[in-house]
Image (cartoon, rainbow, N blue to C red; front, side, top):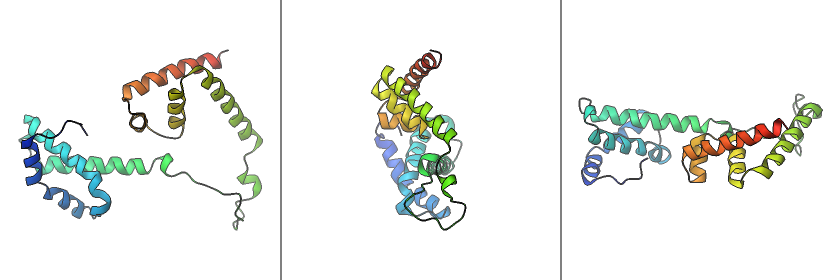
Length: 178
């Protein structure tokens, strides 16, 4: 959401049409407590766009608002289904009832262990040559975060994240070809 506050005209228009948010939630059988904060930003984006972009006036405002709220709902759903939100955890302290969880299947094989060691060594060499911020970005990226999530967490722009990752890539190539 743009950080520029709504104008007085936009605020009044948003207040007059606010019932669209509740209709949207009701139509999609979504809890107000759980989803209002997700779709309201799409609604406010629709208000801003509808009043600022004259070419949208030949559409009903409800259509624009509905689409913007739908986009935010879809983006939220995608975000919740990413790997970082759905990592499977297995504890070695619990006894396994199913036969599929034999010790050989739970503990990594020597090839996986060797691959992990190689990765750790490369990351160790990389950490010597790049900034702490760049290493944090590499860790977040390898954990499944997208550029927007990383930029938000680092309080910077996506463009800067891309630039930092490109620098890391150059250093990584140097390490691999040494």
